[in-house]
Length: 201
Image 1 (tube, helix red, strand yellow):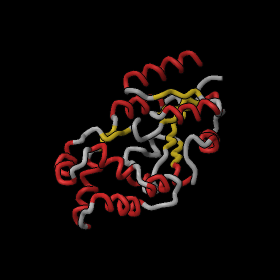
Image 2: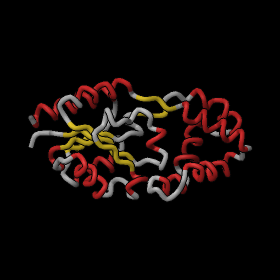
Image 3: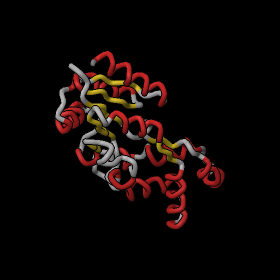
Image 4: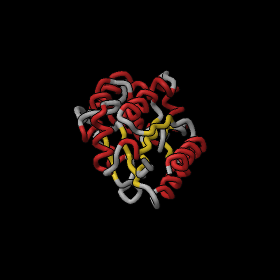
């Protein structure tokens, strides 16, 4: 079957926390590394529940602040600097824009309930289908969330490429019959997608 759709994860693929400078003062103040700060936010129980739509972003930060011990004003300031570390991959987004002239494009992301607002570059004009785990109440690698994405795109698994930075989520896509690629860097993923499109043409 020829490829008809290319689907992308968001965090770690379309964007990432690469500009760490805004957290430098907080590392000194909290006596934490940037990795520890990220883990305190992304690794707490509310964050996991939020990806299933079972907790709010406010609850995530409330639990994280039990470790940070900040006043409300300082917590809000940390939140601003925390998200200032995130950058979007404009090269990859431009590449997706070229793909969209020929193929359907989609997003499938394990994301918090505010993803429609916070993922500012994930727009309906760039992606035909946008699927977030918090809205679906299930997350990767559950086979059903891949199938829902495929159904909404109107394609069979063998007609779709999926890109993710997590090996087990790539494996989940492969198990439902999709062509799945592990994201390492932008140049490599562009080459891999183009090669696969040529092979499947």
